[in-house]
Image (cartoon, rainbow, N blue to C red):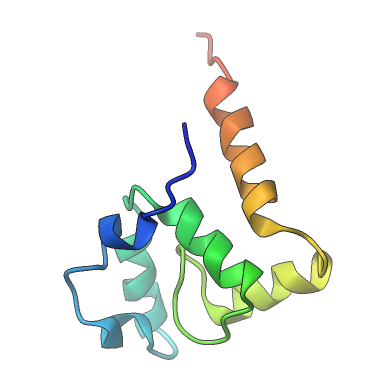
Length: 96
């Protein structure tokens, strides 16, 4: 699966109001649901992590969740990390 450079135009949230993604408390769980089936969730999350975007739900993660990842790996290229993880996941064959 290739990395999508034009991810923003294909995001599940593109047609909805941006205000729905910049909420607090329990409303964040509703915002995260929008990301659940998004075809460009990984690209969105990498964008937020690599640019240290502080507000809103990006790639299915809240600002608190993203800060925790950034503390664990402050110098990571999140695009590389997430792209590699996605490739490894795609290559896994599940046998019954």
